[in-house]
Length: 84
Image (cartoon, helix red, strand yellow):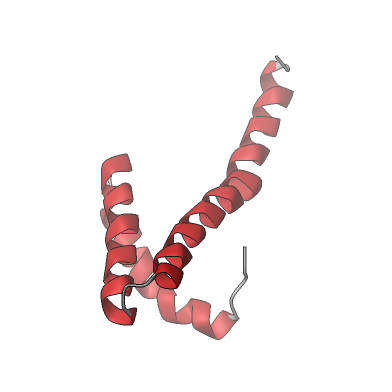
């Protein structure tokens, strides 16, 4: 996953925190991810490269979530409860 420069992260931080305060369930989070991609495509135009960019970003974000959050959580639970 590309790590963007801090100044670019700062630009997104307030909007993301505001959004995070509102999302209450999986459906709403799915809607937000989908809608953000749709809005980006409306702004930059629809072509294969742009559509693929959104799809790729979603997939890579999923992989990063697994690597940085879910896998360490599973490792912690293995230590607490034993392996399979």
